[in-house]
Amino acid sequence: DTEVTQTPKHLVMGMTNKKSLKCEQHMGHRAMYWYKQKAKKPPELMFVYSYEKLSINESVPSRFSPECPNSSLLNLHLHALQPEDSALYLCASSQVGTVSEKLFFGSGTQLSVL
Amino acid sequence: RKEVEQDPGPFNVPEGATVAFNCTYSNSASQSFFWYRQDCRKEPKLLMSVYSSGNEDGRFTAQLNRASQYISLLIRDSKLSDSATYLCVVNRTGTASKLTFGTGTRLQVTL
Image (tube, rainbow over all chains, first blue to last red; front, side):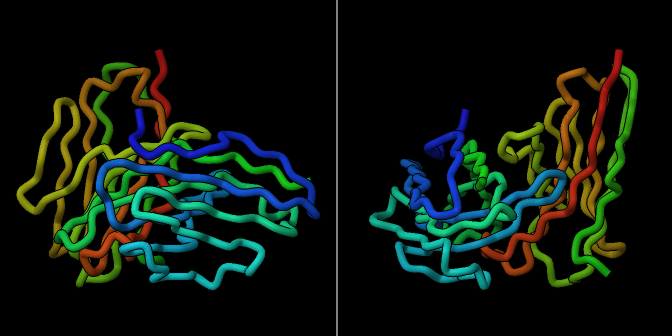
């Protein structure tokens, strides 16, 4: 049972659609992340927000647009995606400033782009 | 050389067996280490942190060998429910954003 909640759990979209993925946590974590995971591969970091400010963008295409409205919420806006963007999108959160920070993942959004 | 390397498996073991996975990392400055478990199409879940002194949680034991730059996970008395992919995760700087994931080791426990 995860304390990081993601919606929707599944999403099918066309290449011209605009959709958003949502993530929420109430653990008081001040770092939030988006990861992308393809089948049989490890999670790949996309974005990191620290204290609601974007701190890392791992050269992600602009068709993915993150937003952090407050310390509990994280969104990922999707527009003009390609079929190769189909993957499991994972949100995670962690504390900031401890020696060994642990990531807590949401259950993910399985995205299919047609 | 990859930053974090794991044998992808699969490891097929009978119920009740003991199984061990190793994971090697290349950056000697790595500061913290974790094992995550991931079921098919589910999110990774933290299994345990790994400390130099070794740590145990029930049937699971994790060890860190800094000199040889590897971590290990030992599972005793394997259960069917242990079937999953085990991800080795290494943190270079103590900041979660610098976590590096291994490709995972697939474990299949059979009757």
